[in-house]
Image 1 (cartoon, rainbow, N blue to C red):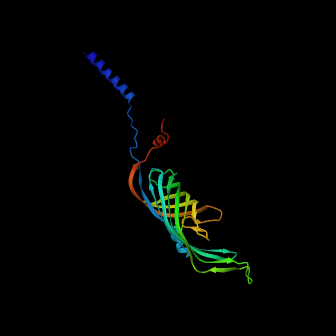
Image 2: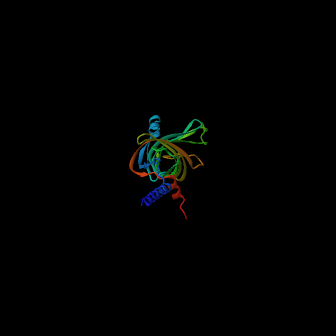
Image 3: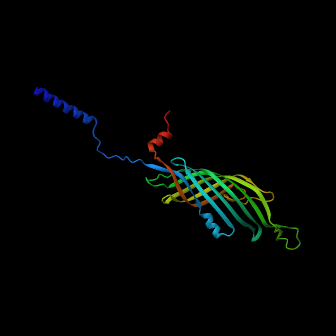
Amino acid sequence: MLKYSISAFFLMLSLLGLGQESDPIDLQPRDTTVKSQRYGIRFGVDLSRPVRSFLDEDYQGLELVGDYRLREKLYLAAELGNEERTRTEELEDSALYQYTTNGSYIKVGAEHNTYENWFGMDNQITIGGRYAFSTFSHTLDNFRFFDSDRFFSPDEFVLGSDEAIEFNTLNASWLEFVIALKAELFANIYAGVSLRLGHLISNKQPDNFRNLWIPGFNKVTENSRWGVGFNYSISYFLPLYKKAKRKKRELYDSNNPKN
C-alpha cells in the first residue's frame, strides 16, 4: 500500500510540474492605466486685430475663433469676424481716392492634427481648410481723376468729388488653406498662431469701382485671386467628455480593413 501511495505522490508532482511549464506565472508588472483624451469645445479671440485696432486709427476689427474635437485627430473649426478699414490709394505722391470698407465674414472648415503628443500633453500642429464668405460695403469718400484737356496744369489730377458715394450689398467667397499651431499654456488655456492662403471663388464688385480690400480676406491684388492672412489667438477649452485613446494597432486596423 505504501508503494502505491509513493507512486501516486510522484505522479502528482510530475503533473504539477508539467502544468507549471505549460502555464508559467507572469511576475512582470503590467500597466493597467486606461489612457483617455478629452473632447469638447475650444473658443477664443484673435489678438492681432484688437492690437492693430489700437495702433492703427484707420482700422477696427474683431475675430472670434473656435473648434470642436470630432475625432482623435480631427477638429471642426470656424472663425467669425468684423472689420472696417480706411485706405488711401496714391500714385506718384498724389492721393487718387480714399475709401472705407466695412463688413463681416464667417469661415467654416476642418483641421487634422499631425503632432503626436506625449501622455498628458494636448498640443497641435494642424493642417486644414476653410470655406469663407464675406458681406461688406464700400464708402468712396473722395476721388481725383486725370484730365488731359485742361489748359492749366494738364499733368495734375483734378478733384472729381468730395461727397461720399456708397456701394452696398457686396459679397465675396473664397477657400483657405490653413497651417496652425496651438500650445496649452496653462490648464485649458491655449495660445495659437495660423497662416492662411486664400483663393477667391466669387467676388461681386460695384459698378465704376473695384473690391480692393475684402474683410477676412485682406488686400485684393490686380490680376490675382490669391490672398494671405494670419491670426494669433488665445482660447479656452471646455471639456465635455472623455474617450479612451486608441492604440496604434487599432488605428491601423480601422484604416486598413481586411477584405
